[in-house]
Amino acid sequence: MGVNARDWSRRRPFAVTVRLPLDAANDGQLHRRHYVPVWLKFALALSVSLAWATLAYMVAHPWVSELEGSGRRLFAHLLIIGLVVTPAFMNAFIAVGLLLDRRPARSRFADGDFPGVTILIAARNAQETILGTLASVAMQRYPAPIEVMVISDGSSDATLERLRGVSYPWLEVIDLKCSGGKAKALNAGLRLASYPITVTLDADAHLHPQALRRLVTRYMSDPPGTAAVAGAVLVRNSRQSLVARMQEWDYFQNIAATRRVQSLCQGMLAASGTFSLYRTDILRVVGGWPECAGEDTVLTWAILRDHHRVGYAEDAIAFARVPPTLTQFLAQRRQWSQGVVEALRAHGALLFRRKLSTFFIWWSLLFPYTDLVYTIALLPALLLACWGVYWLAAALLAFVLPMALLAHGVAYATQSRMFHELGLTVRRNPFGLLGYALVYGLVLKPASVTGYLAGLVARRSNHYPS
Image 1 (tube, rainbow, N blue to C red):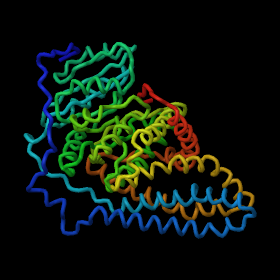
Image 2: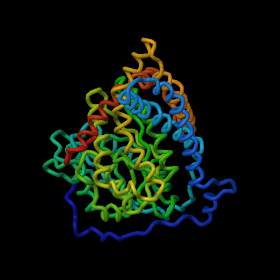
Image 3: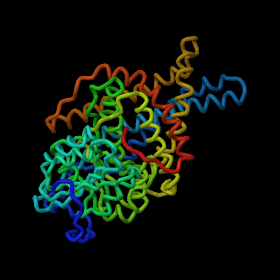
């Protein structure tokens, strides 16, 4: 089917579905003899990270107490907590969480057990990438019916013309004459979705051949309360610029590690719109995507608010194009930070839920503070060290750097094993690693701070990937 108007007479009614059961014959895989309960892993990671952060504070405290004046001591305490203690805690939690993480085995399913899937692709001026994205969908080894809706959101380039040149039987195109933003485009597709599972995919993403099947089987194997599963997003255009090279390490190391640990503790906070799965009925119950900069984050929190679980499929990979220029990169990260504030504004009541996911809601609340302190204090701390005032830089080197190196080392080993299982090879990217280690945070943190400030006043955004 090419680019056609929708035949409303053929639309079958949407059936509200329940969670698909686990394969009873394989359910025991999730309860192996040496299975360690999630709460015990969480308690161990929390205990180690609290002990490490407490030690960092105790070692730094004598230096702070030598300062004259209560105002100066208070300021020094705030710097130590924001620049050393909290990052030491976070890095330790990630490192221990990764060491404890053992992904539950997937259950086995016959081809007839798989549900139909609706894939929504919001596209605005995507003439250069949309056909590649559709080609990657065509290569999926998925045994059940799929429908792909490309929603052209007021595209002014040749996006529609490119789509008219292909004839996939599962493709339907919705042409929104005027751009209303990514959320409106996705919601337009959601209203027409036929199947019980909805997957979002960016118009510049390229799926691994096993991505869709692995994403769905992770959902089918996860606990019954699961309403969404985030796929893994990695960088496709890392050779385009140094900025893209640095982001390759961020996605491969930091973002993937954080999602793994959040998933381990049942606290996934952002099912990225780049590649994620949702129960269609739950999407409709929560009202679809909100019109804001961080629509995927706010939607994820709405799903958590309704007492559902959000999972993570670390081996269901979409390779996406990241911003190749510094200006585009900073704009994207401002939007991400703005989305965190928008989620807190919309669903702040989650801070008071008695669930493991609540821990990561509070974790997110710390980011504005730590990013602000990092922005204003890191360079002065390094300059002070050059003049013989070592107390702040020494604390960073003693407590933040070792745990950061441990977390990144474990993350690299874990990701490399996953790549090997999928027949992929980790690219050599030494210049990107050097930039990621030395300058990435220096430009990222100030951009994040401006995003937090924007989130306090912003009302809506026509957000598309940069």
